[in-house]
Image 1 (cartoon, rainbow, N blue to C red):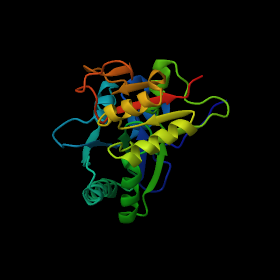
Image 2: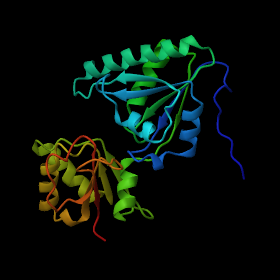
Image 3: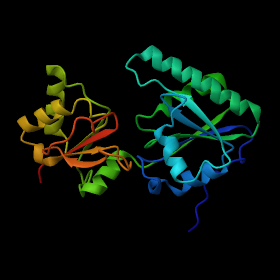
Length: 256
């Protein structure tokens, strides 16, 4: 049975799509994502430096989806400071609104790693855009997340039957409360996925060791990327600190 998805140009006004492009491998782009990227009049990509290609842009370039396209890099600060992040969102929203203002039926895509509805910059960006231009239609296209790729590559299901799955954006284990919280989750969750685990990996490893769960944990570093240090590793093995970064995902399963 054929299924029809919303097509660019079908709406009466400008449309902004938040499109998940997966964790790093172009082969994990969905058919819907590819179609919208091919038909979009403009593609926005997040970067930390306007002069440097970001990971989402890299994926699209490897997939040959940027040829002949208007590409706009939007700068987002990877900072803990809330005001600084909000300033970036507002500035990016102004840029998006100006592009969409130029054409009444413009279809634009914001390409984001993973899924646009899970810990994504797109959530804050779309809210800022609607404050400026409430007439802009905004919709999202789901994408494959790093945790799904990590589960597939290591042969570990994320959840089976009635099991629970807990997803964390990163836990600060620098104090006792953070360590206690993570230890509690180990007891009450069947599977834990923790994003941004690279910077705190030694602390995670210690808690897992103390809980006798080291052999049930794996970490994915820059899933789907083809660079030195990327790949999947058992948490119990030695991992060079230089490889661990923001794009590190921890997966812990309850013992069978």
